[in-house]
View 1 (cartoon, rainbow, N blue to C red):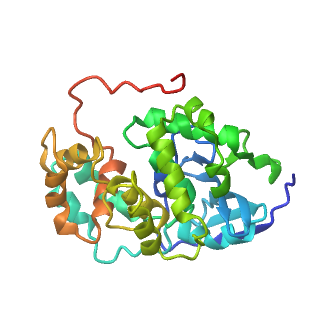
View 2 (cartoon, rainbow, N blue to C red):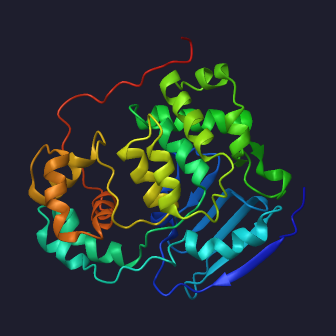
Length: 321
């Protein structure tokens, strides 16, 4: 355990960065053991753990209030790689050229989207956050269940099979965890999945996907090659593929079709309809081809959602089955 950083840098983004909105899709609930976000406007601060080809890293990122630069500090064997990759993780590789948020605002039915789209887009970029295994596992845990169930499962599994971040950085927040490696995920026993509330369909899908990626150097393999291999795996569908594309690889056009809520929110934001379908959402997003995920994310960040018509779906509990 050490408090001496292994690597650090100061990076100046070319836009007025909002780290919280950029990395929020990676966070598996407010209690995510691998990502802590302090979104206070004057001093945004993020703690994140991740794996690199050199080993695990604990990363702290802080916006310097005086000039908008980002101070990045990292500990652990993968610290140097994590610091080097930090700008990409925060959206530096994203190119929003050709996307006009004003067109989204003018097309919107929702007053929230009309008011907020331009200002929100100015501070946001699509991250290329890497962490393919973590994003893949977390996405599979979210298949066909509520967010509460998926987040609970992720936190339970990391606490049981992860590694405390304080082994690498003594002043890391209590409870911050480094996720299991790809090999460690494959070794999680069946009873541990069930104790975390994960049914056999999802744990089997995790096992099949990780087996398909075995031996592949994920840090250097092109996104198309990784996704092509995963698309051949039963249980890996368009929804999971879109989450991997947008979160790990910075795809600005991938849309998570077959999501329980997304089509309703997007259709409501753009037309005012109480409910929508994937087909309607696909048609509505067509004018922004190449940037369709940007539109979806603007709807989310402007907190637009379709009115509820009934009680929330009750979480299932597989822990005692």
